[in-house]
Amino acid sequence: MNEKKGTVFIIDDDSSIRRSLSLFLLSNDYNVETYSSSEEYLERESFDGTGCLLLDINLGGKSGLQLQTELLTIESDMPIIFITGHGNVRMSVETLKKGALNFLEKPFKDEELLDAISEAFEVSQNNRREKGDILRAQSMINSLTPRETEILKYLVTGMLNKQIAFELKIAEHTVKLHRHCICKKLGVKSVPEIMRIADKSGILAKPKPKPKPKPKPKP
View 1: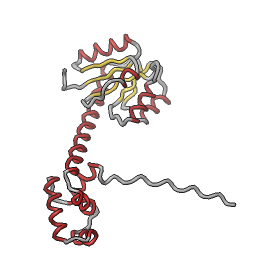
View 2: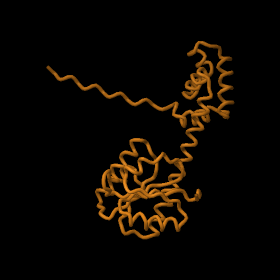
View 3: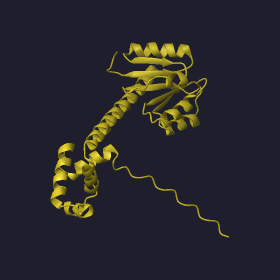
View 4: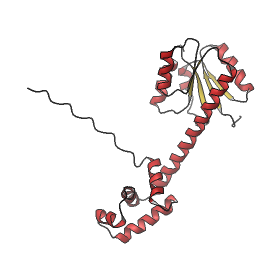
């Protein structure tokens, strides 16, 4: 399999379209998988390589728009290029608002399709790098002891060692020792570096704001 260019997943219920697009992309050294429906694609095991969806909007069964919504629900970051023979401005705006990368109306030019796929693969590669960074950060944070994690959460707020010691009712020297271990495990030397890793790992994710209570009706 050609790993250099990644995989294009063609989802179209027209077999002639699937065949022509597949042959064209294969001739341009892309890996290609074809599916006749959203349901068929969803049965596939998850894909973690570089790729994109070439997705027809007007599918039998679950439409392309419905598939896009479902992929958002499961937090898929696979870039989507919509293709359609019956597009309109409202439809294209809707897909792009939901995160689709491009919207091509049939018949489209070969160069137009290749440019869209090239852009989608660049996005896919960036997503993979971001995922890798997050997993590495989470792995490093998970290597910390519960006490080190507790101290890290104070460190990233800008608190000094003596302030942390006061809050935790421990000796300042103990905080310094834990801080040294944290830096060693994370491979950093400064609090800003610790903050970047902590933020990337999600440990500093802000809690969702609680909904405001509805005002009680006046008697």
